[in-house]
Length: 80
Image (tube, rainbow, N blue to C red; front, side):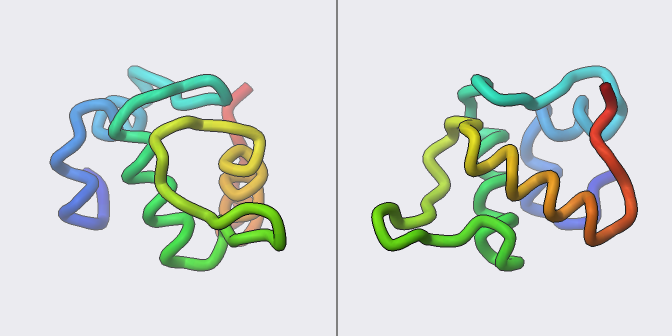
């Protein structure tokens, strides 16, 4: 279901794609680290002068902003 093979290894991301589960601020798991890795690779999650962007598996405010930027780019929005 997910476009990149690396995502297919994560049951959590598969469930997110099927709208069975949700990743949100505060989520902590390997699926978040995979998401962050993709956001870093595609330039949506960037380093700042005081912090290096890394896939730590913690869905914090920076990850949230990166997801919003990605969603805006592809013309979609978060489910509320």
